[in-house]
Length: 232
Image (cartoon, rainbow, N blue to C red):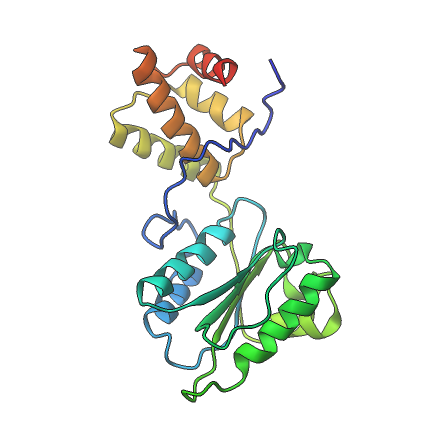
């Protein structure tokens, strides 16, 4: 069987990101800031940049903010490192959201700078648009063109902290209990030791295990986890 160390499963079961299903931990200030702006988007906002290690929840919060805006009928421009041909800035956007800024190539940096400048220009309704960005590093440490790097640090900057081992265990236990799944300490240890520890991946793994356990009429154990992987 393939090496399972820190595997991030792509099993297509992730729920829509929202503020309500973000596991806050010590990141309450960032969460409340984004929630507050999303509810008052017509008030010309200050740009926001969030950073933290992989798995700390940056992309989740950016997607949650985008979903909150979409629910209000707003249009949002989105760019991440997979956007190989970023579109031109669109005047109909109410916000621009840029993820994985630390990975941007030259073309993406050029587009990001254009989006940033245009978003902060006064629109026809007299309001600037929100700029929400994220990366693995603080703005000062980003290996980007200087004019973009300095702009990313202009406004509110929040560092996100990944959940502690105890917090991850608590969340896993609560989510398993909510599904009626008995998750032994050994099985949880195995999951935390062998798979990606970000909560999005762990929740997807738990969903997959729950489904496989029901299908096979077996309890969630280490042998079941291994059997599930072998059946993929």
